[in-house]
Length: 363
Image (tube, rainbow, N blue to C red):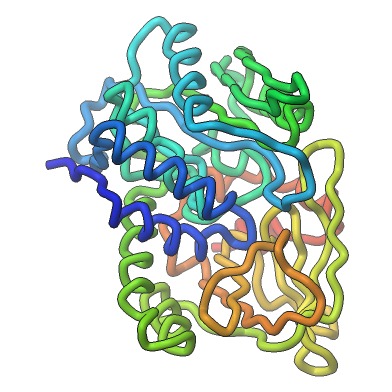
């Protein structure tokens, strides 16, 4: 039986999604807008893959762009709905449901409003349990596929005449950059619906149960909050199997927005032997110590928590803040086929000038 999502689930999705956002994953305010609109407009329904027929069409609901707060973006709830409608029109068939490309403060709820208004199901599966910078990293193994796929994008700053509706067909690796460019042209953030595939494919390649894990974590955080920040941090570590690998004052933030709609750079927490250098490409992709030794690497979950245990996005970090650095090792997480796809790593490694693939693909 499916689960009707409620207002309580909105807050849990924001709280749990914020940890899996890994320093990115959108904005809490945007997520609250999406979730509240959905549960008031209809009855968004979360269903497990066990309930979905093999031949059902499932697509990915995603938001594309850099969530660093450095651009003049505008995206409305209706943009997510229109993106789904554009894809269904091009596909020539109704979608059974939507997965999300990643968890996040808002992205965990990317499919809720289309579910409430169009009747598609919110599928309890994700392209990646944590947030990541490129569409290919949440494409459930389709990044290197020559099969033409459909991708749509809708949104943009209306006052700046930057609103865009876009529908493209082609191999995922070729058309995903088109949507990222559209996000930049629209103001830095745009809604998308993409890569419709049969449920049998999703069952084999997605990270199953990814939304439930975010909701479960969020519920536990809400329950721990009255006991204070240390209780919240302990709860996050206990439920995820994670650990605190850094604790200190932000000594330097060097992150800049580029024309491919990425926020790229480093954030340094602590000094001396306690130094932790976080490598940022929209999200945290790796952590080194002061001697350059690697302490965490994607697809590990990496998050920065304040003294209240609240995850702080890379775009909101300022020098002088005190932060804890959380790591949840990849073997604690459900992983999708995209994580094991070597083709998704070279663009990220070139941008950050660090090695990621050797760790991500090991084991």
